[in-house]
Image (tube, rainbow, N blue to C red; front, side, top):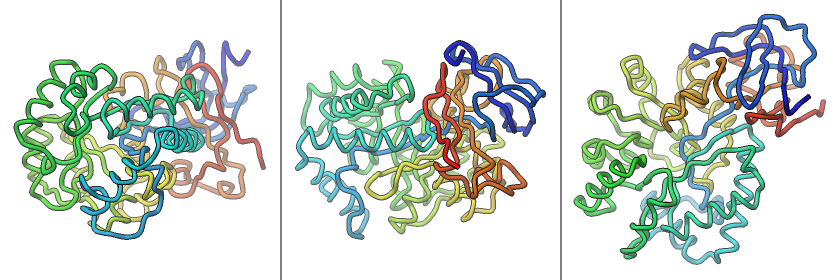
Length: 374
């Protein structure tokens, strides 16, 4: 029965408005077939039913150098910094093994899709794809790769477009302006996404990033309302990485202002950024966001699901619970010691739930992960 039809019951976080409904969800042939108000049905899993998490920005190649000493951001992740030296010194097989571990961790924490900014050109993309294959997660997890040409390798650029979903660049300050312009134009011609970091260290690279009209910009800790207005006018989304900003000590993005702009069109998603600084755990990211910023918990959950789907141009298929969408779902138990007594389901999921409270992870056709411990 499981592979043909699944039934989930409990509190459903329904639709793009994330309305709480008591009832059940029927999954058939990988899609949400029915959402009904009858809760008293025989179900494969019970609890709080939410969309699977979508991690809109990671650097999982950094898995080989976790928890480095504190240092200025330029020395940590700059072109000649700690991160890139570690990546250059790490044997290929060791890199693949460490990335494989991180993908397993991403899967275990309820994420159904993640987007990785992959350094190292074609070889770096090959390592990521190799690690993904070794995990056996192809039928349980989706991945989007944002690669970049390797420095000094002219042929690399010709090959990179064939193997990625998009181009992911560090900062406009790290590349010749004309090279970036040509790369952005080529990405658009080939139907690939284009994204970059900006406004992390200072304001100097924000204007140049916006002028390239990328699909989304990561960080924006130094951005202003005027920057958000320009992004809105050009239909550019934003991705915030709050725990990463906390570790690097560069300050937080003005998230409430960004979300105010969201009412008029600015989409704000969430990523966990460098694995060397933080685990790729969206539960932790949600908790930090909800306890640092005065935001409605429903908005925080949207950022980690529907909004991130919009950032990656997947909102027609995933990110919310509606009939006809792919059944990428997460069921959170409400009877664990941690969750028992929670009065507001969404607030409980956002502010306190962990991987230990997962009842089931559903990826399209079937339940692919469960936690049955009491």
